[in-house]
Amino acid sequence: MPNAIGAIIYTSFSAVSAAFSFSVVLTGLFWPGMMLSKCRPFSNILFFISLSDFLGSVANSFGFPPNGSKLCSAQSFFYLYFLPASWLWTLLLVYQLRTLILFKSLNLSLKWMHIICWTIPLIPTLLPLSTNEYGQDDGLNEASPCVLGGNEKMKFLWIIASDTGLAFICFVIMAIWSAEIFKFCFLTEHTESFEKEISLFQSMRLYPLVLFITWVPSFVEGVLAFASLLSTSYYTVITPVLVLETQYGTIVTIIYFSQSKAARMLWMDLFRKTLSRFNMIDTTIEADFDSSRLISNVEETDEDILVQRLMSRDSMVSIYANEISGIGMSEVSTF
Image (cartoon, rainbow, N blue to C red; front, top):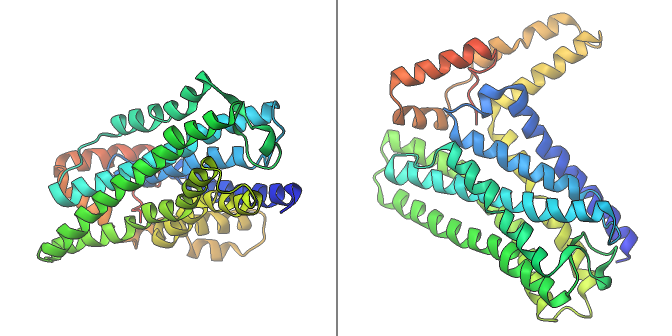
């Protein structure tokens, strides 16, 4: 595939992923009580998955910048830092789900999740600079997004060991934890209360599955390239693989909005109010879609119910009261 066409395709798909992920980020920013509440730990994680993917996808939308340019260096940093951060946030999503279902607790606070997810990616971002520089080697210059330049063997070694290797470790751990949850759900008697946990797991398991589907081909391609097994077909294989790895944020967004009735209603309400403000629809239609009336009909989700079981009713009421006093939409339930 010609480099120019490959760059256009890669840039377009990256921009789509950035736009999709940004819609989830905007949902959290417009209605923080819905995604960023302490009472909704999984919604918090989904927000930061989308934020990480958005920043990484913005850099990917630069296309295939020439080696040595500022865009190339910026793309390398964002690629090596924010995309691994999205993997780690997904890993912690599975971890929190595991502890909630198996041990009826949430062991990691949001503070520790931030520490883990924003510090560990510094390893694949900074360590390679000891032997290579941000950029691209001559053979892939303007034919692939910028990651690392310099010594080609060391480049692939660093990518496999610290970047793709980190993804592989995340995949293995998530597979083990998911298997533990599956086994626990299979062996445990399905009471009415336990059905909520199963339902939450069934909705959340899609996110690590999508991460696996979109990133494993890239891992395989990196290993084969390092072993010099793609010498004749590398340029034919690389663009589809690169495009696929850009779509994690796109699919995460589709899953989130397909499962979040509240998010869909709020955006619909905002859209209708915006149209009515510019006299594009009848104001009586806007009244029919008043957000407070819509939200009042949204039932508590599995996440809300399960987290409430872990917290005392007094603390839960206190948290909700503080949110409602400062955020008009904080009573919205998610998922």
